[in-house]
Length: 386
Ligand code: SOE
Image (cartoon, rainbow, N blue to C red; front, side, top):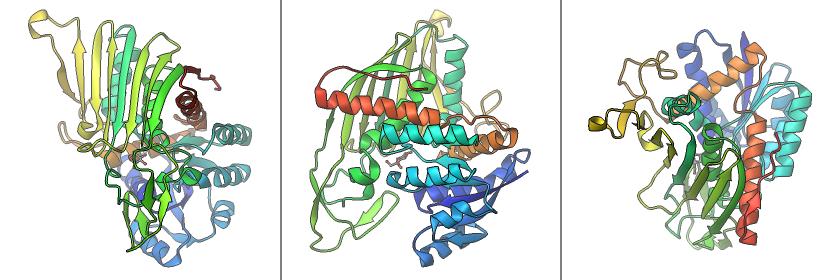
């Protein structure tokens, strides 16, 4: 089966998704085949360069035309967050399968509307929480689900970056609330909230604080991905999002958690890390060493008891049979290939994709409760909406 895709956006995520579609037929030959039908963006010259480089069949500068094209079965939304809702609703109403990058929307209300329309459309919908697809994270999940860590008491999760510590770094779209919805919380916190939900369960209440350390920045002259430049004498503009958000959480199942999302942790380029402690054992993961899971099992013989480093690159570890021989590690882009494999399989087998827009909604519910808690300086409950 072929799935003809229109990809909206060709920068950081557009490139990662194009790469995944390219790899899928080679490494997952039994899955539905993604056809790189249309690449969509606003700037014709740059778009043609990207089409040529990423191997798309055609281009379209009007996203509506791309979405409505009868030769398109599925729409991949890889543009800044303020454009997610309108593109998604249009595509869903046209009966197209939709993949949407995280955070799903600017607000919980918008995210709920997207889920509602997606459910009524009866198509496959998926949200871009790629870190779930790291084999070491899958190992953590199976250790928890099989009870080998016992009752889960704690999760300690952080997502630390440092790319905007310099106050001269310009005000890129990720620092504009109207475009991004929130700052570190929506960009990085969304990922660790999703991992916590995936591994430990639903979050019931939160309390938190957030801070914007650099309150004004120069307007950007150019931006792409996480890089940007400034022109001499650029006007200063207010930063309207959080630079850092920290929160505490109680889980419905009885566990407690602490979370920290920041772009001001110098030396941390992409530390998406967690530790989970249960009554029988613990696991810890750090995306910068994404092939490994540290595992501690209380049932080990006392003389050798301690954290061991498990390299999740050979069977029975998830996806290991698809890639390279044992010990031949994989990287960031492979999490995206696995994510797209899930999307293709869900479309071909007519089942719900995981994570779906429902996961996007529940993550947004946690984020909205965190923002409320930061303002009210008190504990706020998280409604269970899915
Ligand atoms: C930038 O902070 C960023 O690229 C996020 O937008 C991604 O979602 C995350 O995976 C890595 O960091």
